[in-house]
Length: 371
Image (cartoon, rainbow, N blue to C red; front, side, top):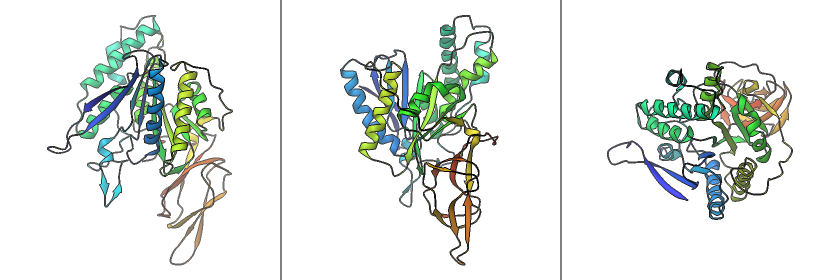
């Protein structure tokens, strides 16, 4: 394992931060895999999976079984990790401006298209190299406006160099689920099965420029812009949601790390016996078919359905109890599907998102992700 530090902008005089990057295998070799944990710094399950994964990768490297290069950032957000308000960690949003750390990555496609126009050939692999160079140049030209954007630039610089990106998160209370680009469905279907995902959500564009799409979307959009030239999908990227915030456990994290190693072995990035892929717990569905359950009233929140439950449209999944009158307002599932996530708080205000149901019929448009 080779460890390096990427210096970030200081938050104040003397308050210096850096990203720790750990590399396994042969430097610069292909295929390259990039894995990062806890971009939302208060989501610790990904961080403990990274801990167990690092130990496995060190052993695999010593055995000479890593074919390309695997790059691991075990804690991707030192800014958010340092943020606390009245003792509570605030790692999802930058306290300086309220921006989500997993939103607002630069959309480089228009300028990259200008750079490669007239230079593409009939050689798909050469086109991939050309596009990577153009992506690198455009990212280098981006001038961040604050320390959080400096961090985003550093993370995207690592991610866009990879053939495969795993961005490890969690929800408030949830079962395992993952998000990816529509054209990456087949790539991550085995991973969905191996990690026991209950929802596998697909979108061409989910809105607000999250990290995984900043890595993957350019390849789909550039291929569509230049249909007369072969442009392979150069970076398959997924957001892995490892259950809920409290699901920090050695046994579970070790199993998740083993599933990732099995997936990388299946993809021939790690040498070894090809693992058996279990039957998937779910099929891929459109992210546009995933509907939030909004609180119809304020009140004490009492869930009647657990994460992972199959629900029917109109089924009561929670009661909202007015603490002053005792009136009970039912909250109902918006569609048939699996309730794959819910909030951790137990008092809500009207209109607040309190759960998510993955359906099968796409009905939503616009921004498909929560705040």
